[in-house]
Image 1: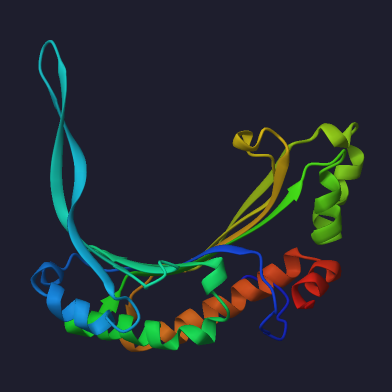
Image 2: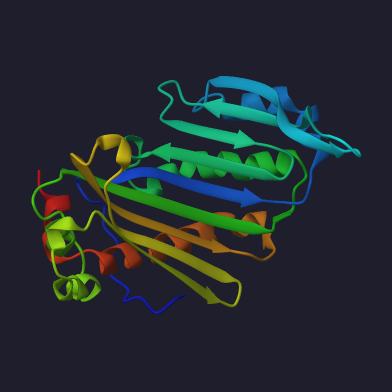
Length: 256
């Protein structure tokens, strides 16, 4: 899609994943709020924790003297969670988001049951196509903030991406170094963020290396093609991830 070198896809023994998000956008569908029981039954084996709610928003009105903010309820939300809470699906009238914590994610191929259930949900609600298909993977490595946290970048990332750090004086004082890129190829879009942050809530004692890859296709996709497109997007994300890291990091992912 974007010119990153294809590599052989593999399942690592370890991962740095914090969150994986699979998301579909579709035209507004009123059937969702009329079929909560059918939707619950469809997902029940993998997502037994079920609830519904109304979306919340703010309505703003103006007069000559004051601005009024009035809470309002709008839309309809179905929430489903696995027994351990590590996987969740949230559905509203235009969106389905499937979120997995890193500990629960092993390999994209292990999600076949969940993805097939999602396609069955679309059929149940007479949704013939989606307008946007996205997968986002957020990797975070936490480390103790030593004298030179930029060493972590040099240790773990593709050297071509971080060699510029050697040009900066006092590298040990750098506590935020986050790069962001955006690609567009026809109807395919890619956002990449990578680098170093020292979250203020950690009082600078803990740092984080972040690799955030968000790839999405914005076009009409028939529901019969969703799993195939998802697989292609996942493979491209793997190519990008492998390009971003170095051989030392891959070895860490394969170590027992």
